[in-house]
Image (cartoon, rainbow over all chains, first blue to last red; front, top):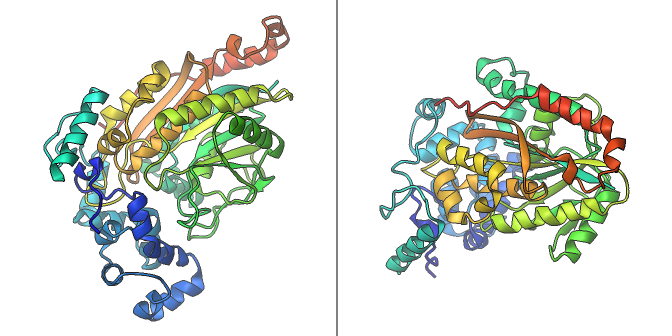
Length: 151
Length: 317
């Protein structure tokens, strides 16, 4: 079943961890949570595919985990606070993961943050509603419109 | 009677905790962040609260996806620091205030806020980092008991800003109906703008943050009308945790004195925001004749006010 369209799907580069993704990604997040235990980290490292059989995961989710495709994991219901535990198990800093998800080198990502971060300008909306939200009621109604369009 | 004397807003960036734990506070990058909290520590040392209520969120430490309570009130006698993957943070065990916590639970549930009661819980950086920033790094014990209030801001939807604000009001009512004479400080933590997930990670919106802080002091009701999508669009997918600051604000007087503010970008992936708001004493709920008896407390407050100065937005851009 296709995802129910949501107003926040209009935010670019963002996978909101909502109730639907939480349901879909339960296995991913429980797998990540299991990595808080050293014995589990060892078992996972010894045979990743075998270890993943302990969890209820779809073939797409297994593929995303094995490939360390962090954006795909988020899309399939992973949550960043959980998937970060997989990154830590691989010995990566959080900044490394952030760089991977944004498709930049860690150096470039770090430089961007030092420079004040990613600007919101040009990053507000897929549908071109790229104006600061001024009137609450206005932004609400336009959000409704955009989700209606996608239907 | 117990009363809420002040509210503290503070980011709870995990890297700040790591910098403290690994002795990096003197590095220029971190000094920029920590220097903004020096006056806050002085303020807190003078305010000397008897209890702190700390509104924060758990980050897959105490709660996984097995249970996702919207509001969880810590009623235990103590809350050990959680192991977040690098061993528990080397901070003292957080002592609770079970009697006041139970009183708050009973009062706010009857006020129609359906809290989850937690009698066993570990606390992660979401709670301990703001405590470090305001109380420093005590070796053996924190200077006062703490009532943790964990809010779900990890799974969408978190409670609305309005709901948070109203819960703050209910908490205030509960505190003020507690018979013991206690001074309470309430913390709202998290934020400010940041996104740490997906291709848009790294988003910072200083303009929006500044407006949030301005309205927090002057016009919090305006903030209660911000829809979730605006938080996520303007302040980042994870910036939505700023709704927790509205619980703190709701627990204060309508008119407050902003005694301190600090803002800097970045700490790790996040804009760091911090504010201290004091209730005006005459609104503390006691009769005016009681004011004289509290003269000592009053001058303490005045001294605290003098020793802190408002620092205007001081970001890197």
